[in-house]
Image 1 (cartoon, rainbow, N blue to C red):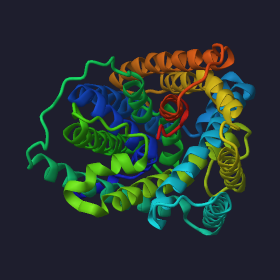
Image 2: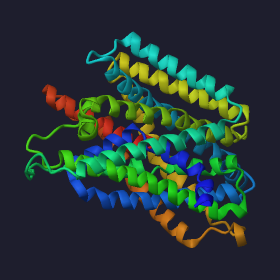
Image 3: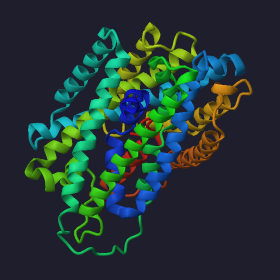
Image 4: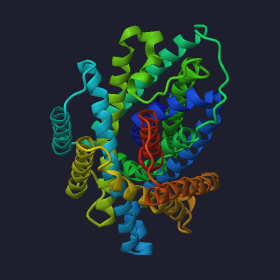
Length: 441
């Protein structure tokens, strides 16, 4: 048992960055809409994620060079740069969701009155500059991040487990009423995207090298992947089941369009303080994703340019800081004028169509090279499941392409009610988190 916990490390960072605000809100929405029918989806997405993370970890352990260096030596530097640029752009644009989630977690702590625009900007600037300072000042950045993510995952597991147990020891407060409305499949598909994060899996190879793993650590890498990603799946399942128990087939359905709505899950355990406890959870999820999400784009972009792939190098830190600043700027622009970031998000979604399947294909390509023999070989089972994951990523990318097409070819404008506009905003947010976010968060 001691050896198992000792081997846990890189994948827990990936799990923590994937389990962000988007994952929490999306799985809650699925539980309220589909109930326990969402559990097989979580199981399938978790299996795909385990395979992809395991594949990436083994590649990081068995190859002497980094992923982009290996791709550049085989397919040419432009291919590596294309992958790095795509991933960096996605991370930088969608880092704005972490900034907005940070505001969403902080505002309720100051009462029911929303913060003004200047106060929101001040919070975001202070948070980003503080994280950038930490980025440059910490001597052992990897170890610090790993320990922080272990603590975060432990806190989230205990919190949601206790709430889950309390809720299931009490009878339902209402009689379920079957809904006659057509189901909205977007949250269910979104939960796949926020659990099966190809971008997060791709970064696992870099984390394995930071850990110092080599070919002899293949077993440790596999154990780490299974434990950490299974924990991700279990927490997601607990959130879904809690939401199912509280919201599914409720006679007075709740839209779950805000943090406050979802916070009602915690009322059986925390009472009136539920909103604040849940907001702190959302805040913790945003902060956990804040730095690591930017590190993914910054490290891979630097590596693709041949400027280094270690967190001890300067270029990965510079590119990570750039991703943080771009995400902050996009978030501030969004807060200043609603809809001002639509074009940026559309570009990022268009890049997703190419980028996410390309990342999966790159991992499979490097995992099937003939020189990987003996203790450097990749088990066929991992490759087969990873190939299935590649096709799933293609399906999600196709859905994104359809969404981008709809944005570029909008139907004739018609006057909408406030309720319809609010529903549109929720749909956009779920799609934004599901198919665009690298956390898939």
